[in-house]
Image 1 (cartoon, rainbow, N blue to C red):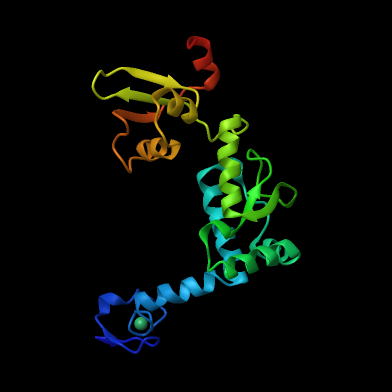
Image 2: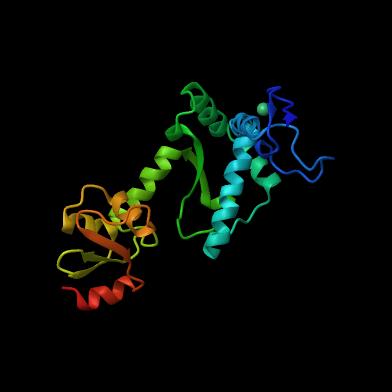
Length: 209
Ligand SMILES: [Zn+2]
């Protein structure tokens, strides 16, 4: 057992994260308290900017086209130089940290890199609906990958240019259910399996009337 520095409770060693810098190899605060501290920190202006930056870095690792062309220090200065960031942050705090009001960074051109001429601040909620609108308007073809459906009963396979097309054709109420299906968090929806078709939209146009 070890006493947590924050909550003062005696807890099992498994309740502490490993930390090689400490003499006993464990953090001085328990996992639960570390979570609370982390949440408090990520709600501060600096903590939030750090989180946004790390998310951009993570996304750029998955997708080369999303390169981050600034350092954390440069990004931090950029955020601090905008009244809009403070306004959004204040609204978010006052809303009781409503997820939809979280300040977020949007790439103006979804095909472009993370660079100062291509980013703008907006709430997370606006950012999401912009992305969704892009799919519907077909501006954002990257997020509207071609998909395949398979009817579980009949085995009939269909191919669609976009998730929205599949949603409309099969009468499924939510596009995000199809996404969950593709990602495997649910196995099927409305009697269909879904996966990405890995085929270009222009190729589909050439054989689907
Ligand atoms: Zn604790």
